[in-house]
Image 1 (cartoon, rainbow, N blue to C red):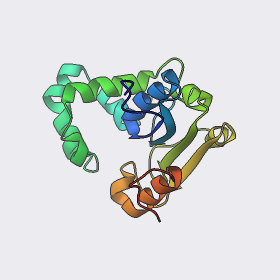
Image 2 (image 1 turned 180 degrees about the vertical axis):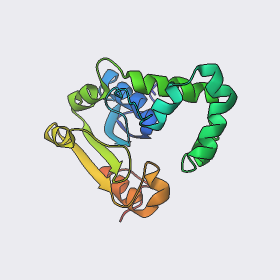
Image 3 (image 1 turned 90 degrees about the vertical axis):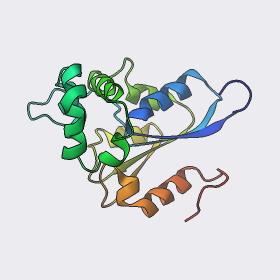
Image 4 (image 1 turned 45 degrees about the vertical axis):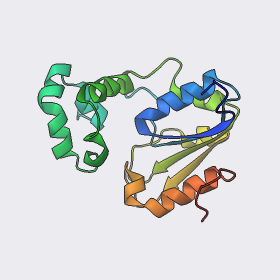
Length: 178
């Protein structure tokens, strides 16, 4: 990215990969012009007695158990994840879930709100809860909610998701326009 081929580019990520995008934007001023993240975990996930989110259920297992049986159980038990999860390495999924539960220091929320570039957080109304959306907005982050959609909002409401991206990335060539 820094070899001169990319300069001041928009960056779009979803869910777990948003950690990388926020970090790249924060550590490389001028490289990322706009940042759009969707259904991202901004904070460490608190412990949950009920198993909470999928990341909790994955991280609660030993790595070898998840790789041997838990990955297949996720594919079968969380069908909305299956189309993309089936393409992933079980070890990478496990270690990513452990990282999401643990969080980062500083938090992704702190890094996101400290950025001075245009930022958009896209969430689904039936997706992961977003704590303190008002504080994100006050920090200059546009918060967009996709109605009638879950965590995989681009499957549930592809047109609404595309419209949200087009609005967040207005000058990006090739983006569909509403």
